[in-house]
Image (cartoon, rainbow over all chains, first blue to last red):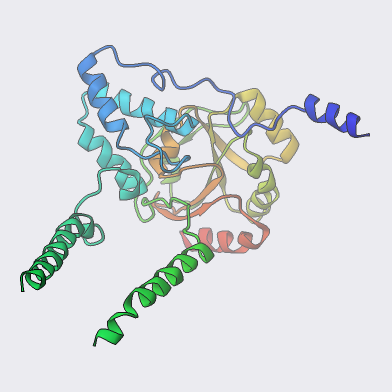
Length: 134
Length: 175
């Protein structure tokens, strides 16, 4: 019985969660113009994949990430500015989709925190040095 | 003063522990909601995805009648699970239109034959471009679009039986 189950399990086709369409032409193909490709690559590295959240679309093998890379390359090749493409995506998915967060009400602490910690450190250091000097 | 200060690390530790357990007990919502709700459907023209059904254009969504736009695919298993709900919604008189993501006509025809066809039109979105334009990040997702072509509501994941009445009401309210 166990052996039969094993045979059945090995013979069963896995259920696929992906389509069987080939990747979009520009998902895995660089643009012929190296300058345009460099611009597209820089943008792709700072756009977050919607499927494997935490990876950039440059790193992800998800189908949607491939389609997003194709979209980025097409638009860069058509002369669109990377900032405009990022804005297009942020308009649809929110600032979440970008690894280059804007400075706003919820993100200011990212910039303020290092200054805050250095200030606290300086105060602590100053006080402990003063104590030792006494 | 000195006495009280020595408890500070313990208090901080307990606060940190409480914050971490709260985070574990209530995990963050991983769904990416579309920021296009309240905006017009981006303009698009999609060719027919299945023989016998027309394709889909943004102009049709702005032609005066509200629609339910279902973003789905024949290779998507939860889309099978929501098929009866889409049928119930279509039977209630709601025009249901589909956007088939990365699909093949023959696979889609098999899917419709097996799970029923609630769709008035299905556009073929072979490179997920229109899906992205809607701010959708997966299949299935459903958008309520009003008669002027404005996106009113998004449902992420399959429509469950308890969602049907709400979706019908939302479409009826979106004249």
